[in-house]
Length: 197
Image (cartoon, rainbow, N blue to C red; front, side, top):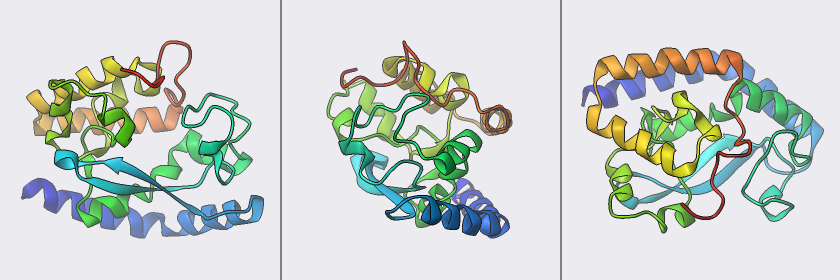
C-alpha cells in the first residue's frame, strides 16, 4: 500500500512538473515526422497480464516492421533526430508515468517485456512476473541493454528476492546518474535480446 501511494504521488508530481517539456517534445516529434506522437507497445505485466506501455515515439512510424525490427542499435537509421535526444535523456519514458498511475507499472521493478520474450521464459525466469514492471530497476542500473538478456533477468530476480527501501533508494540514485550520463542505452555486441534467451 505504501509503495502504491508513493508511486501515485511521485508519478503525478513528475508529470505535472514535466508537462511543459512533454508538450515541447510532442510538438517536436509532430513537426519532424509523420505518425502518432505516443508509441504504444504491448508488454507483459504483473502475473502475466498484458498491457500497452506508453512512450514518446523516437523512431519513424512503423519502425518495428523495418530493418532490424525490434532490435535497436546505436546510430539506428530509424531513430529520428528528436528521438535521439529523447532517448539520450530518457525523456521518451515519461509517458510510462501514466502506466504507473493506471496501476500497470511501478516506479521500480523489472522492465516490462514483450509477449514473445515471456513465452521463452523458464519456470525460474517466470518469477520475474511476480512484481509489477517498473520504469527503472536493478538490471537497468547494472548494465541496462548492454547486458545479455539472461543476465538481466537474473538481476531482476535478485531484486525481487532482496527488495527493500534501501535498495530502491540505491536504484533511484543510480538511475539519475545514468540518465545524466546517457549510458547503457543500446545493446552493443554482447547485450540485448536476439530472439532467444
